[in-house]
Image (cartoon, rainbow, N blue to C red; front, side, top):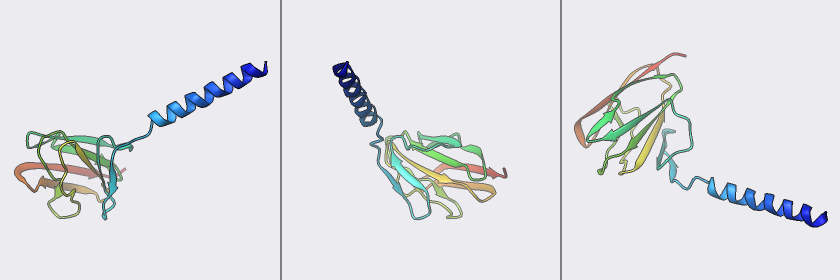
Length: 130
């Protein structure tokens, strides 16, 4: 009976170690001075919307988010892009291929943005009240 208990506890310990070591997020995430987050791969946060960056375009280019909602931009392209607010309120800096950037919108209204490297690459986030 004692051997069976030890075996069961050993298996539970092994399963716990295996589960937690496999579930760790090994992506690189950094916090920008404006409170936004930049990272590569999947960032462990819930987002109001995900915007892809592909072929010099934001997809979708027009999104609506509730006040306080966070948008995640993911660079699925092979070149560097940026997500830069026209009014300077947020700026991702360089987002490398496979990288991402997120920003929480607290100010109500339209927020137009662009890629500083590709003039034709523009988008808008409409932030509305709760």
